[in-house]
Length: 420
Ligand SMILES: [Zn+2]
Image (tube, rainbow, N blue to C red; front, top):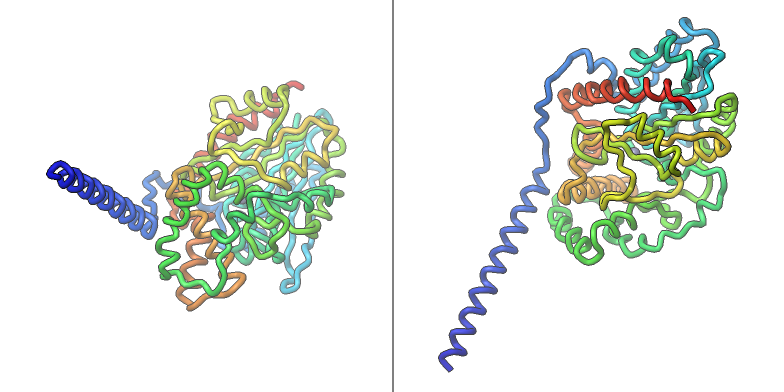
């Protein structure tokens, strides 16, 4: 009897300790989740900031005037626009600048931005930086260049990742409508978690403790499985996150001809698509599409010294209907080198960072679908959303230009000198 009492006592102590640990854990996550912030300590170079514009219109204006400068300088340069239809805006364009190389040029470099509209702030800055510093006769001797500015101008202008139809261009890009038949089997199981209904109230219990539900789902399904289900892309729920549409978005239909015509003379295409928001803050992550061995070797040569995320890590996920894959399909008979640059902002490689990023996307989409409880809620959500893709910090902006310089200095030269 005495022994029994002792056992019960020990049991209570253990339960007590476990409870305290759980409360400490939740408390820790609560504070980390609700005060998620960054101090960027990188050294600031003022000159690096000139490439950044705070609106779609200003970014486009700079892109056009830089294109005009190149047009003056290099024979055969073409600058043109593709209007993108919209129900609310008659001034949305994708802008192009094509600089043909010398007669020996058998390669073309494509640098595209703003596939995810709001990521266009950074993408456009990187393009302007490239146009000012990397286009010269030596490079053009072997390589032509095509710049595509703001593939999703609606999203850029109105600070959304997606188009006016709530479509993620990086899940919609295809030359064959079969894409829209693809079933993402995991998505219905995460639908409720990532697509809550009703007006957004940022201070609600569900939102403050969102991480609890997220961690429960991670524990149930594992992070890779959960991430795959969420971000793969889905073609069934038009109001949901990562919706890829049920038809070609207008620009995806129109771009085929333009890209096909421009790439026609070239045997090798190196396509870089610029994104932000994923990965370690201030770092450029290299995400290639899956490629076969000879091309893989070439990419390792081009990006020697860099970590390329080939998809063998837990952080990896695959998507359907991405823009780079689409450019590759248009050029299926060529040597195609596909690469996505992701400029990290939220440390989404960490659990808390990825939950925070997802939550910001959820609230933004929920607000778009159902509205906000108050102006403050709307402001907070929109602010968090833009900051995730375009950090306010000048130190961050300056730093990524420095990082891009090192990356371009190495990789572009190696691409241009690559013997094929
Ligand atoms: Zn993106």
